[in-house]
Length: 334
Image (cartoon, rainbow, N blue to C red; front, top):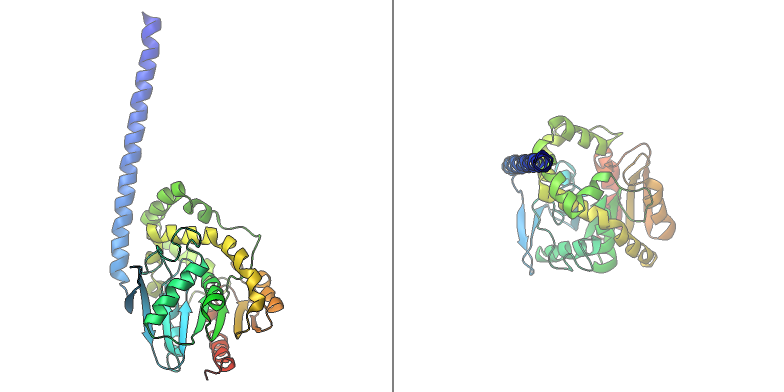
């Protein structure tokens, strides 16, 4: 009898242990989600939407801040960002001679993710789909012949805008434009999957410390200093929302395929193109993107910022404004 009951006892204990473990996992997941939700609510209260909402025909809402008068100037932020990156300082300086419009990109800040323009189908949430969405929003604002400025991932959206929607001129700030072979940070690979995106973003949203937030911002600006007051104005809590993390990761993970499709079309561009890029940028590499663009597109003009990292519009705002003014002059807008 002992030889029969002993295996049953072992299996019973194993089943109980697995049940306890499963219960602990469920409780931990529930607690993590509740904590992430609470931090999200707090973040939304601390950084409420500024500007206005534009409702598109497909039903999505796009957030925009509009200020100033003069030629239309559109600002498109980078990965993991929101329009507050531009309204921190550059926006107000430009508004004295342009009508400046800063958008939250799809899935970032307060702009909805894409469902129209291909949704998650053929166009995905790539640069062309995002440019189409923001272009429709700009038309509702009465925009004509804009200068479109894009930072980082926003640079890719700006290139798509140039190819598909005939702006007067474009300016890229450390813009993504050409295929790369340097890989991506592992978080994009994890968060960009269904399983990883369900697990990691709530953990980050729930438990990211102030030290981790400041370290992440410092890495984006390196080797340049993080501007005083930027963290408290920009609102990284908006980026830490699980839904925003997923949107950002999925878009960045798919970006290379979209860039491979866009890049062969660049030589046909004849509009004024101004490029601002730092030689110390270790996120979007100077040689892969900026130098490649100038080599392939005759209308592209490059301003090289020696020793500057990934945030040239903060590190050298005067050079950025000069490039925008130059684009406007070349386009006959000034």
